[in-house]
Length: 154
Image 1 (cartoon, rainbow, N blue to C red):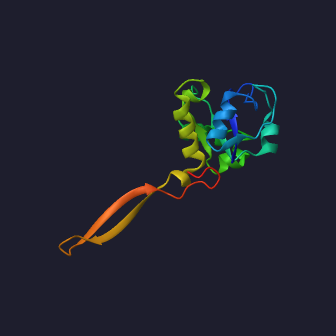
Image 2: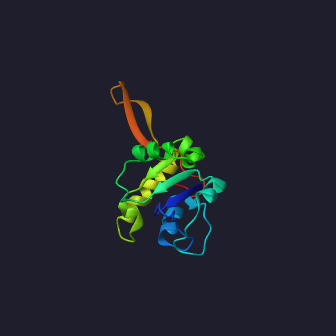
Image 3: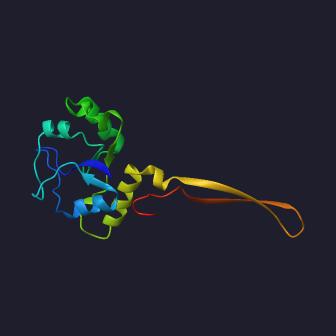
């Protein structure tokens, strides 16, 4: 499981609790919040984020910035720029669908899963050779998924 900080709002810094539909969506994507709270929408301090050191920082849709510009912005800010996730570029700007309990949430879950587990979604090409009925060698390329996740057998 990837440990993430899901930023719902920046001022004040607000995240998700354990009993929200977003926390459920994170689990489906192979991630979990670093913040353990029974409150649905807890406010936390930057000092607490530094202590928790999330592997990824996720921004909910509607912030209007791409992940690249969000990362550049965070790298310019005191405290944020010192977080390991920011240093290595693990900042993800999820679609607005990630904050709505609607059918589009499925796409947001997949977007997150691809961001935090790229190795599971990597494609590989398998080259097979065989001989046809005339004895000619045939070459076949087949695209497939990389080895799957041990915990979910995908």
